[in-house]
Image 1 (cartoon, rainbow over the protein chains, first blue to last red):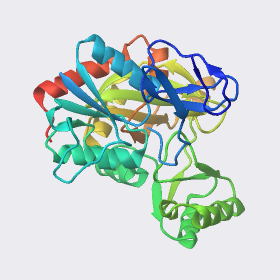
Image 2 (image 1 turned 30 degrees about the horizontal axis):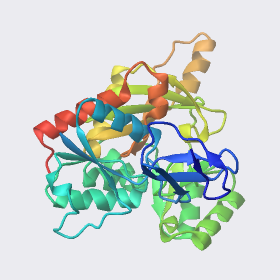
Image 3 (image 1 turned 180 degrees about the horizontal axis):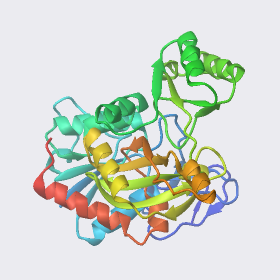
Length: 54
Length: 302
Protein backbone atom coordinates (compact mmCIF):
# COMPACT_ATOMS: atom_id res chain seq x y z
CA UNK A 1 0.00 0.00 0.00
CA UNK A 2 1.28 3.46 -0.86
CA UNK A 3 -0.20 6.87 -1.54
CA UNK A 4 -1.27 8.34 -4.84
CA UNK A 5 0.96 11.29 -5.71
CA UNK A 6 -2.00 13.03 -7.35
CA UNK A 7 -4.78 12.82 -4.75
CA UNK A 8 -3.12 11.28 -1.71
CA UNK A 9 -5.47 8.30 -1.53
CA UNK A 10 -4.08 4.90 -0.66
CA UNK A 11 -3.26 2.72 -3.67
CA UNK A 12 -3.30 -1.03 -3.15
CA UNK A 13 -0.51 -2.85 -4.94
CA UNK A 14 -0.16 -6.47 -5.98
CA UNK A 15 2.80 -8.60 -4.94
CA UNK A 16 4.72 -9.07 -8.20
CA UNK A 17 5.15 -5.36 -8.73
CA UNK A 18 7.61 -4.44 -11.45
CA UNK A 19 9.51 -1.20 -11.98
CA UNK A 20 8.09 0.42 -15.11
CA UNK A 21 4.62 -1.00 -14.57
CA UNK A 22 1.56 1.26 -14.54
CA UNK A 23 -1.10 1.10 -11.85
CA UNK A 24 -4.28 3.14 -11.64
CA UNK A 25 -5.42 5.12 -8.63
CA UNK A 26 -8.95 3.86 -7.93
CA UNK A 27 -9.84 7.17 -6.31
CA UNK A 28 -8.80 9.79 -8.86
CA UNK A 29 -7.99 7.65 -11.91
CA UNK A 30 -4.45 8.93 -12.27
CA UNK A 31 -2.10 6.52 -14.04
CA UNK A 32 0.89 5.90 -11.82
CA UNK A 33 4.25 4.48 -12.78
CA UNK A 34 6.08 2.19 -10.39
CA UNK A 35 9.53 3.75 -10.04
CA UNK A 36 10.71 1.51 -7.20
CA UNK A 37 9.46 -1.63 -5.54
CA UNK A 38 11.32 -1.87 -2.24
CA UNK A 39 9.62 0.06 -0.85
CA UNK A 40 7.03 0.83 -3.53
CA UNK A 41 7.31 4.33 -4.96
CA UNK A 42 4.83 5.72 -7.46
CA UNK A 43 5.03 8.72 -9.76
CA UNK A 44 2.67 10.18 -12.34
CA UNK A 45 2.89 8.10 -15.51
CA UNK A 46 3.91 9.85 -18.73
CA UNK A 47 1.10 11.00 -20.99
CA UNK A 48 0.45 9.02 -24.15
CA UNK A 49 2.82 10.02 -26.92
CA UNK A 50 2.02 9.96 -30.60
CA UNK A 51 4.54 7.30 -31.56
CA UNK A 52 3.52 4.84 -28.86
CA UNK A 53 2.21 1.52 -29.98
CA UNK A 54 3.29 -1.84 -31.24
CA UNK B 1 21.44 -16.58 -20.31
CA UNK B 2 21.79 -12.89 -19.74
CA UNK B 3 18.93 -11.25 -21.60
CA UNK B 4 18.30 -7.53 -21.93
CA UNK B 5 14.90 -6.00 -22.49
CA UNK B 6 14.63 -2.50 -23.92
CA UNK B 7 11.51 -0.88 -22.50
CA UNK B 8 10.00 2.28 -21.12
CA UNK B 9 6.76 0.80 -19.84
CA UNK B 10 6.11 -2.67 -18.49
CA UNK B 11 2.81 -3.75 -19.99
CA UNK B 12 1.15 -7.06 -19.31
CA UNK B 13 3.04 -8.41 -22.34
CA UNK B 14 6.40 -7.58 -20.77
CA UNK B 15 5.31 -8.97 -17.40
CA UNK B 16 4.44 -12.27 -19.07
CA UNK B 17 7.84 -12.35 -20.76
CA UNK B 18 9.73 -11.38 -17.60
CA UNK B 19 7.94 -14.08 -15.65
CA UNK B 20 8.69 -16.74 -18.27
CA UNK B 21 12.34 -15.73 -18.56
CA UNK B 22 12.90 -15.73 -14.79
CA UNK B 23 11.11 -19.05 -14.33
CA UNK B 24 13.57 -20.55 -16.78
CA UNK B 25 16.48 -19.21 -14.76
CA UNK B 26 17.61 -16.47 -17.10
CA UNK B 27 19.09 -13.26 -15.80
CA UNK B 28 17.05 -10.35 -17.09
CA UNK B 29 18.54 -6.91 -17.44
CA UNK B 30 15.75 -4.37 -17.71
CA UNK B 31 16.97 -1.51 -19.86
CA UNK B 32 14.79 1.54 -19.37
CA UNK B 33 15.61 3.50 -22.51
CA UNK B 34 14.60 6.76 -20.84
CA UNK B 35 17.51 6.43 -18.45
CA UNK B 36 20.21 5.11 -20.76
CA UNK B 37 22.82 7.06 -22.67
CA UNK B 38 23.82 5.41 -25.94
CA UNK B 39 27.33 6.53 -26.87
CA UNK B 40 28.50 6.03 -30.42
CA UNK B 41 30.83 3.07 -30.01
CA UNK B 42 30.35 3.27 -26.25
CA UNK B 43 27.56 1.04 -24.91
CA UNK B 44 25.70 1.79 -21.70
CA UNK B 45 27.01 -0.15 -18.72
CA UNK B 46 26.23 -3.86 -18.83
CA UNK B 47 24.87 -3.92 -22.38
CA UNK B 48 28.03 -5.30 -24.00
CA UNK B 49 27.85 -8.44 -21.83
CA UNK B 50 24.30 -9.39 -22.79
CA UNK B 51 23.68 -12.57 -24.78
CA UNK B 52 20.76 -11.01 -26.56
CA UNK B 53 18.55 -7.92 -26.30
CA UNK B 54 14.81 -7.95 -26.94
CA UNK B 55 13.29 -4.66 -28.05
CA UNK B 56 10.01 -3.97 -26.26
CA UNK B 57 10.05 -0.19 -26.56
CA UNK B 58 6.64 1.40 -26.43
CA UNK B 59 7.79 4.45 -28.38
CA UNK B 60 8.61 3.75 -32.00
CA UNK B 61 11.25 6.48 -32.20
CA UNK B 62 13.14 4.97 -29.27
CA UNK B 63 12.80 1.48 -30.69
CA UNK B 64 14.36 2.50 -33.97
CA UNK B 65 17.36 4.26 -32.46
CA UNK B 66 17.97 1.98 -29.47
CA UNK B 67 18.07 -1.16 -31.64
CA UNK B 68 20.42 0.61 -34.05
CA UNK B 69 22.81 1.42 -31.20
CA UNK B 70 22.66 -2.04 -29.63
CA UNK B 71 23.31 -3.58 -33.03
CA UNK B 72 26.29 -1.26 -33.51
CA UNK B 73 27.83 -2.56 -30.27
CA UNK B 74 27.87 -6.07 -31.74
CA UNK B 75 25.21 -7.28 -29.30
CA UNK B 76 22.48 -9.44 -30.86
CA UNK B 77 19.17 -7.58 -30.85
CA UNK B 78 15.69 -8.66 -31.88
CA UNK B 79 13.98 -7.39 -33.75
CA UNK B 80 16.73 -6.00 -35.90
CA UNK B 81 17.01 -2.25 -36.49
CA UNK B 82 16.27 -2.85 -40.17
CA UNK B 83 13.02 -4.60 -39.29
CA UNK B 84 12.13 -1.84 -36.84
CA UNK B 85 12.82 0.78 -39.46
CA UNK B 86 10.59 -0.90 -42.04
CA UNK B 87 7.74 -1.77 -39.70
CA UNK B 88 7.73 1.56 -37.89
CA UNK B 89 6.77 3.36 -41.07
CA UNK B 90 3.63 2.32 -42.96
CA UNK B 91 4.93 3.64 -46.28
CA UNK B 92 8.13 1.62 -45.97
CA UNK B 93 6.15 -1.45 -44.94
CA UNK B 94 3.87 -1.08 -47.96
CA UNK B 95 6.85 -0.84 -50.31
CA UNK B 96 8.57 -3.85 -48.71
CA UNK B 97 5.43 -6.00 -48.93
CA UNK B 98 4.73 -5.00 -52.50
CA UNK B 99 8.35 -5.59 -53.52
CA UNK B 100 8.07 -9.09 -52.07
CA UNK B 101 4.87 -9.76 -53.98
CA UNK B 102 2.80 -9.93 -50.80
CA UNK B 103 -0.77 -8.70 -51.42
CA UNK B 104 -1.26 -5.42 -49.60
CA UNK B 105 -3.86 -2.66 -49.95
CA UNK B 106 -3.33 -0.27 -52.83
CA UNK B 107 -1.54 2.77 -51.48
CA UNK B 108 -0.37 6.17 -52.66
CA UNK B 109 1.82 8.66 -50.82
CA UNK B 110 1.73 12.39 -51.55
CA UNK B 111 3.51 15.30 -49.90
CA UNK B 112 1.15 18.15 -50.60
CA UNK B 113 -2.53 18.61 -49.79
CA UNK B 114 -3.44 19.16 -53.46
CA UNK B 115 -1.69 16.04 -54.66
CA UNK B 116 -3.05 14.11 -51.67
CA UNK B 117 -6.59 15.25 -52.53
CA UNK B 118 -6.00 14.19 -56.12
CA UNK B 119 -4.87 10.74 -54.90
CA UNK B 120 -7.95 10.49 -52.68
CA UNK B 121 -10.26 11.38 -55.56
CA UNK B 122 -8.59 8.73 -57.70
CA UNK B 123 -9.29 6.12 -55.03
CA UNK B 124 -12.86 7.35 -54.68
CA UNK B 125 -14.92 7.23 -51.50
CA UNK B 126 -14.59 5.74 -49.02
CA UNK B 127 -10.84 5.60 -48.81
CA UNK B 128 -8.45 5.83 -45.91
CA UNK B 129 -5.77 8.25 -44.76
CA UNK B 130 -3.35 6.96 -42.14
CA UNK B 131 -0.38 8.44 -40.33
CA UNK B 132 2.86 6.82 -41.53
CA UNK B 133 3.90 6.38 -37.90
CA UNK B 134 1.33 5.37 -35.35
CA UNK B 135 -0.45 2.46 -33.80
CA UNK B 136 -3.54 1.24 -31.96
CA UNK B 137 -5.77 2.65 -34.70
CA UNK B 138 -5.10 6.23 -33.72
CA UNK B 139 -5.48 9.12 -36.19
CA UNK B 140 -6.90 6.88 -38.90
CA UNK B 141 -9.42 8.58 -41.15
CA UNK B 142 -12.03 6.86 -43.28
CA UNK B 143 -13.00 9.48 -45.83
CA UNK B 144 -16.53 9.40 -47.17
CA UNK B 145 -16.57 12.65 -49.13
CA UNK B 146 -14.42 15.32 -50.73
CA UNK B 147 -15.34 17.84 -48.05
CA UNK B 148 -14.23 15.43 -45.31
CA UNK B 149 -11.00 14.79 -47.20
CA UNK B 150 -10.29 18.52 -47.50
CA UNK B 151 -10.87 19.00 -43.79
CA UNK B 152 -8.66 16.09 -42.73
CA UNK B 153 -5.84 17.15 -45.04
CA UNK B 154 -5.99 20.73 -43.81
CA UNK B 155 -5.90 19.59 -40.21
CA UNK B 156 -2.97 17.30 -40.86
CA UNK B 157 -1.04 19.98 -42.73
CA UNK B 158 -1.73 22.68 -40.15
CA UNK B 159 -1.72 20.94 -36.82
CA UNK B 160 0.46 17.93 -37.27
CA UNK B 161 4.03 16.92 -36.82
CA UNK B 162 5.97 17.02 -40.12
CA UNK B 163 5.32 13.29 -40.55
CA UNK B 164 1.62 14.11 -40.97
CA UNK B 165 2.53 15.95 -44.15
CA UNK B 166 3.46 12.59 -45.60
CA UNK B 167 -0.06 11.80 -46.77
CA UNK B 168 -0.52 8.04 -46.84
CA UNK B 169 -3.68 7.31 -48.80
CA UNK B 170 -5.05 3.81 -49.07
CA UNK B 171 -7.96 1.97 -50.62
CA UNK B 172 -10.74 1.12 -48.20
CA UNK B 173 -10.94 -2.65 -47.93
CA UNK B 174 -14.45 -3.95 -47.39
CA UNK B 175 -13.76 -6.60 -44.76
CA UNK B 176 -16.26 -8.88 -43.02
CA UNK B 177 -16.27 -6.94 -39.73
CA UNK B 178 -12.98 -8.43 -38.64
CA UNK B 179 -9.33 -8.78 -39.40
CA UNK B 180 -6.80 -11.46 -38.52
CA UNK B 181 -3.77 -11.01 -36.28
CA UNK B 182 -1.02 -13.59 -36.51
CA UNK B 183 1.93 -13.51 -34.13
CA UNK B 184 4.89 -15.18 -35.76
CA UNK B 185 8.57 -15.79 -35.02
CA UNK B 186 10.75 -15.58 -38.12
CA UNK B 187 7.73 -16.32 -40.25
CA UNK B 188 6.48 -19.29 -38.25
CA UNK B 189 3.07 -18.61 -36.72
CA UNK B 190 2.75 -18.91 -32.94
CA UNK B 191 -1.01 -18.31 -32.81
CA UNK B 192 -3.70 -16.27 -34.49
CA UNK B 193 -6.94 -14.54 -33.65
CA UNK B 194 -9.68 -12.60 -35.31
CA UNK B 195 -10.51 -9.11 -34.10
CA UNK B 196 -14.14 -8.21 -34.67
CA UNK B 197 -15.98 -4.94 -34.26
CA UNK B 198 -18.93 -3.02 -35.66
CA UNK B 199 -16.54 -0.11 -36.20
CA UNK B 200 -14.36 -0.10 -39.32
CA UNK B 201 -11.32 -0.15 -37.03
CA UNK B 202 -10.84 -3.58 -35.50
CA UNK B 203 -7.79 -3.02 -33.31
CA UNK B 204 -7.81 -4.86 -29.99
CA UNK B 205 -6.73 -1.54 -28.46
CA UNK B 206 -10.03 -0.09 -29.73
CA UNK B 207 -11.99 -2.78 -27.93
CA UNK B 208 -12.48 -5.31 -30.72
CA UNK B 209 -13.68 -8.78 -29.72
CA UNK B 210 -10.96 -11.39 -30.07
CA UNK B 211 -11.34 -15.04 -30.94
CA UNK B 212 -8.88 -17.82 -31.76
CA UNK B 213 -8.42 -18.33 -35.47
CA UNK B 214 -7.31 -21.50 -37.18
CA UNK B 215 -4.68 -20.76 -39.76
CA UNK B 216 -4.87 -22.02 -43.30
CA UNK B 217 -1.85 -22.96 -45.41
CA UNK B 218 -2.50 -19.86 -47.54
CA UNK B 219 -2.31 -17.55 -44.54
CA UNK B 220 0.74 -19.36 -43.18
CA UNK B 221 2.47 -18.79 -46.49
CA UNK B 222 1.50 -15.10 -46.54
CA UNK B 223 2.75 -14.62 -42.99
CA UNK B 224 6.07 -16.23 -43.86
CA UNK B 225 6.44 -14.04 -46.93
CA UNK B 226 5.43 -10.88 -45.06
CA UNK B 227 7.91 -11.70 -42.32
CA UNK B 228 10.70 -12.27 -44.83
CA UNK B 229 9.80 -9.01 -46.55
CA UNK B 230 10.59 -6.99 -43.42
CA UNK B 231 13.57 -9.03 -42.24
CA UNK B 232 11.89 -11.50 -39.89
CA UNK B 233 11.74 -11.51 -36.11
CA UNK B 234 8.91 -11.49 -33.58
CA UNK B 235 6.09 -9.90 -35.54
CA UNK B 236 2.38 -9.27 -35.52
CA UNK B 237 1.10 -9.69 -39.06
CA UNK B 238 -2.37 -8.28 -39.74
CA UNK B 239 -4.48 -9.50 -42.64
CA UNK B 240 -7.91 -8.73 -44.01
CA UNK B 241 -10.20 -11.06 -45.94
CA UNK B 242 -10.90 -9.21 -49.15
CA UNK B 243 -13.74 -11.14 -50.74
CA UNK B 244 -15.39 -12.84 -47.77
CA UNK B 245 -18.54 -10.76 -48.13
CA UNK B 246 -18.97 -11.64 -51.82
CA UNK B 247 -18.24 -15.29 -51.07
CA UNK B 248 -20.90 -15.41 -48.34
CA UNK B 249 -23.43 -13.73 -50.66
CA UNK B 250 -22.70 -16.20 -53.42
CA UNK B 251 -22.99 -19.13 -51.04
CA UNK B 252 -26.31 -17.91 -49.65
CA UNK B 253 -27.68 -17.65 -53.19
CA UNK B 254 -26.74 -21.25 -53.91
CA UNK B 255 -23.40 -20.60 -55.56
CA UNK B 256 -20.15 -22.33 -54.82
CA UNK B 257 -18.27 -20.78 -51.89
CA UNK B 258 -15.20 -18.96 -53.03
CA UNK B 259 -11.99 -19.19 -51.05
CA UNK B 260 -11.29 -15.91 -49.34
CA UNK B 261 -8.40 -13.83 -50.54
CA UNK B 262 -6.22 -11.94 -48.13
CA UNK B 263 -4.32 -8.71 -48.01
CA UNK B 264 -1.61 -7.89 -45.48
CA UNK B 265 -2.18 -4.38 -44.18
CA UNK B 266 0.26 -4.16 -41.31
CA UNK B 267 3.33 -5.77 -39.77
CA UNK B 268 4.05 -4.83 -36.15
CA UNK B 269 7.59 -5.13 -34.83
CA UNK B 270 6.99 -4.66 -31.09
CA UNK B 271 3.86 -6.73 -31.13
CA UNK B 272 1.52 -6.86 -28.17
CA UNK B 273 0.23 -10.36 -27.54
CA UNK B 274 -1.70 -10.23 -24.28
CA UNK B 275 -5.07 -10.24 -26.05
CA UNK B 276 -3.95 -13.17 -28.19
CA UNK B 277 -2.62 -15.05 -25.19
CA UNK B 278 -5.99 -14.65 -23.46
CA UNK B 279 -7.96 -16.21 -26.31
CA UNK B 280 -5.82 -19.10 -27.52
CA UNK B 281 -4.62 -22.38 -26.01
CA UNK B 282 -1.01 -21.66 -27.01
CA UNK B 283 1.27 -20.25 -24.32
CA UNK B 284 2.40 -17.26 -26.35
CA UNK B 285 5.09 -15.89 -23.98
CA UNK B 286 6.57 -19.39 -23.66
CA UNK B 287 6.75 -19.69 -27.44
CA UNK B 288 8.38 -16.27 -27.66
CA UNK B 289 10.97 -17.21 -25.05
CA UNK B 290 11.63 -20.54 -26.84
CA UNK B 291 12.40 -18.54 -29.94
CA UNK B 292 14.48 -15.98 -28.02
CA UNK B 293 16.61 -18.74 -26.47
CA UNK B 294 17.18 -20.26 -29.89
CA UNK B 295 18.16 -16.86 -31.31
CA UNK B 296 20.62 -16.28 -28.46
CA UNK B 297 22.19 -19.72 -28.94
CA UNK B 298 22.55 -19.51 -32.67
CA UNK B 299 23.49 -15.85 -32.59
CA UNK B 300 21.64 -13.12 -34.38
CA UNK B 301 23.67 -11.40 -37.06
CA UNK B 302 24.59 -8.15 -35.38
